[in-house]
Image (tube, rainbow, N blue to C red; front, side, top):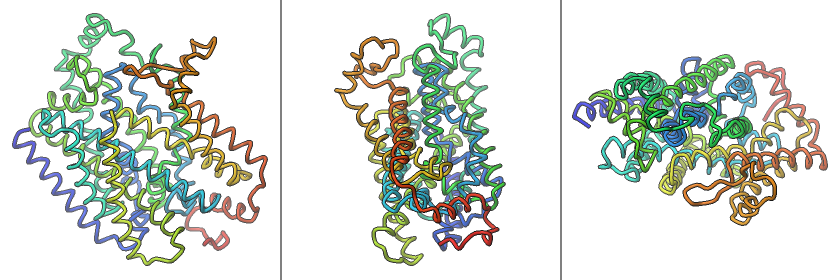
Amino acid sequence: MRSLDILVIILYFLVIGIIAFISKKKIATQNDFFLGGQRFKKFLMTMLFFGAGTHTDQVVAVVSKIYRVGLSGIWYQWLWLFTSPFYWLKLPILRRLRRMTTADFFEERYSTNLSICYAIIGIFTVAVDIGLMLKGTGAIVDAVTLHQLPTDWAILAIAGLFVFYGVMGGLVAAVWTDAIQGTLTMILSFLLIPFMLMNVGGMANLHFELEQVRNLKHVFSLVSPVGITAFYIFAISLNGLVGMFTQPQVMQTGGSCKKEMDGRVGSLIGTVLKRVCTVSWAFIGLGCIYMFPNLTDSDLAFGKAIYVLLPTGLLGLMIACMLAAVMSTCDVLMVSGTALFTRNIVKNVAKTALSEEKFLLISRTTSVVIVGLGIFIALKLSSVIEGLELFWKLNAFTGFAFWAGIIWKRANVYGAWASIIGSVSVWLLTTQSFFISFMSNFPGVESLRFVVEKEGVMSIYLPWQMVFYLAAGFILMIIVTYLTKSLPGKNMDRFYRKLRTPIGVDAQLDVIK
């Protein structure tokens, strides 16, 4: 990088630092730190959903997967395409729950022990997601510095930036960073395309070189006959739909809007913008196949692309934007993980009331610990794609318990426990060598492709693994619920009355403590 690039990065972070200090003055309560005081309107909600849901690791993962398998790799982000309409329904539900964390929902709907269980899973999910983003951004920094700042060292440097930022400003700081970096991400994502097309000699030449000269079949196919097939897309999309409500940060992002319509409009527009930006990443991924034909680490493809394609100044702005994306998203995740620990583990285990000041102190201390776990995971991940697939699975384990708790009045704590334990158990079973060996020799079903070989190691085919643990979670939720006693009707009546009552007309409800 040249001096102008470095200057742009420094100026960008000076602005971000000022925002953090200003935001700190507005943090006085848990509601301020975790939910931003529930005062965000349509624009900030749009930027929050776009920014919090658009990670640097997603760009790296999409480009990396497309580099490996062709255009069908776009489904590593487009798997959420089919969940987008549900955001219009999702926001009122999250807001009307009147809870600060997703674990609060499990405590009210089921039991305290189940909320602690979710909090533990949620904190680990947050750490994996943070690790995933650090891994992806570290790969970009590694590539653009020509390996002078290796991925592992970049991970540590980036983590230090967003820990400071998140501890200072909470969700308020994160949402304003999302507004800035979200706008720049959209602009710079599409700005890369003309530079890429000039470099590869236009789209027609790219088609000719990849399909005719290199004989890469199906490289421009959205659905591949091998690899990312229609069944593959169905499985990962279904998994995403099951787990969309149980991502640890959803209560913070969904509950921080000023009015329900602010949340609905912001969430829908923000998620649609993410899907549109994914198209630009797909073009870059195809260009990387042409420009860098012999990469041993596909995670470096996007970083190499921006280094080669962007002129001085814009390169620095892109790097600053990517770093800001990590900061803002990790802020939201860090706040979410901290809320789970303080509100749903410390509070329930200690069983004593803590002042707002002590809660904030514990929250800020816990933030550092959660990030430390995220750094450890980032250093252990072999690739961004591996981390992304793990993140998908973790969200789905508690998904049926959440969905059933919302739409099925008879759903009870026994069914929820059975669903979660069953899903996790089946997932662990499908990772064991004896199970993989058994499935590889399953008579008469070779065409179903239960087992695949990846880098010399046999593993269960990802879509089948998802089908197995999702089926276990769904079936156990239904059967165990019907075989056990339902929950008291009075508590359930009040819970479902809340879901039908918007915030602001609480006089229509019984007193809810």
